[in-house]
Image (cartoon, rainbow, N blue to C red; front, side, top):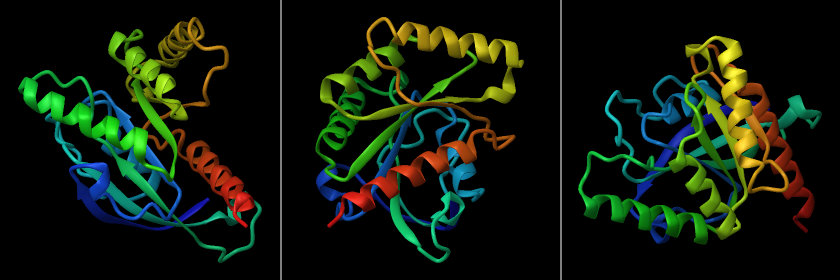
Length: 216
């Protein structure tokens, strides 16, 4: 897949304020400071598309971007442009806000995940530098209860040696396998080295292709 353009569209406080559900949509979420904005910028090859910050909890609304892509790299005709949404969701687990703010974010995220009819898949970002975190496992378990399709994206792989990266990835997937019969697709990424970009974009292109085949 070749990204032709990536444009910020709107930030919404709730799912009913989001743009029309008329395009395939791919959402990105993870613990605060997991590298979500950097990953989105890397995937779109745009340095400042999603705002990055050293301060956790910067993303507080549902941020929509409109992506125009050419799937020719996946064997399709050139100029067969496809339009879809990429969505940046607030991070979960940020403790340095009030209880009311956390409850508001939780309600907003749940409302979006359970009611956004065009949502194809949620990319759950996991910091590969750490052992499995209870908050990540709990969120993934919740997605399962809501029947929301998801993938796992291991981030910041450039900040550890590859042996540690592989060990932590395996440990996380092994932990998931205790509760899940089938493991979801997963990707190892580095926004600095652009690792995983091709794999994630190919996955999205394949999803878009499958949806087009289902459209009368």
